[in-house]
Image 1 (cartoon, rainbow, N blue to C red):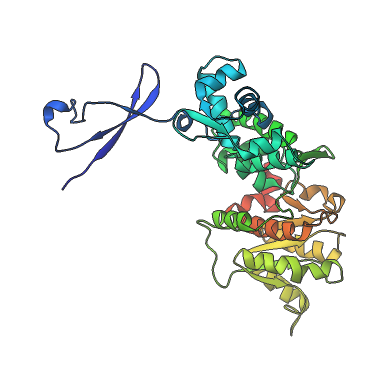
Image 2 (cartoon, rainbow, N blue to C red):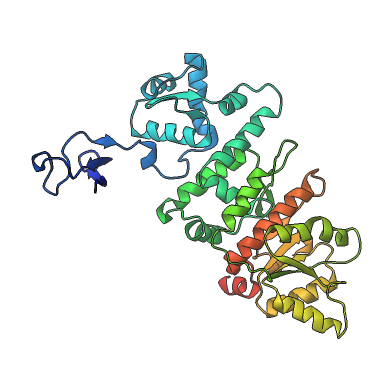
Length: 380
């Protein structure tokens, strides 16, 4: 049987990774001590050796496509030429900066060792209408590895306090512990540049711009699919919704919460006509909450029935997705749990909320510690 094997080696003299192929049919005289073929080493690209997330903020690396546009008429060029255009040495730090520009989508590679300016960079640097720059920066955020995942996870919510945020970055997003501070700095600067974060009541709020007039919904579906990996949801698993019955909030069940729960793969149940049958109402509510895999609570207007049901859910240590249009309606002792905030002045608030609820339901099943009140209190 013919078979090629690959062996990854590290050249200790310059710390570059190399890859070799060994063929069993080659004469032993052409192989090394362990039977590996002697010959030319194929270098692994510099970008492949770097950290997954861009090591620079989005505004920092825009100087690269800008220099190419101004000094080379936007034509593709060698990496070493770019260094000359920028006015720096063609060394390791600048190569990392090129890697960051590639990760944001400001550059691409027409061939090995060469770069060219993308339409996204041109849109930001040579805008044709007022919204081009900010739209382009936000697209760059969604392009960037790790940064896009963290943004999408917290969009429409407040970032947790620093220690909780650091823990999430390491445990959930697999950011190396020694690079967490660097990541947070790049993440903060980049979202600031794209106008994606704002401070509310001493909390950093992440704006949700996942929808616009040109959205196709494909990115939302892809996020749901990615989150659903390895999450076990049975055909009979339910999501219990705790919310007022009266309009306008009561109308959100059919238009937002029910389709969101179905999108997450669960069966929606609410404590109204679906629960109120024969027997005591409280028994029906208790059974609905106790039998649910996860729950959703609409806290807007502080409805007493909702808070009663929420108390039952907490007593049972059930994971709950909290939702509110008003931060003041969220009690202080619940603010350590993730809360989805929606803005009804946003023309796309309904579709944004629908997708965000679906995502947070799956996230609550995957990571229940984020959505169980008792555990959150213990961590404080």
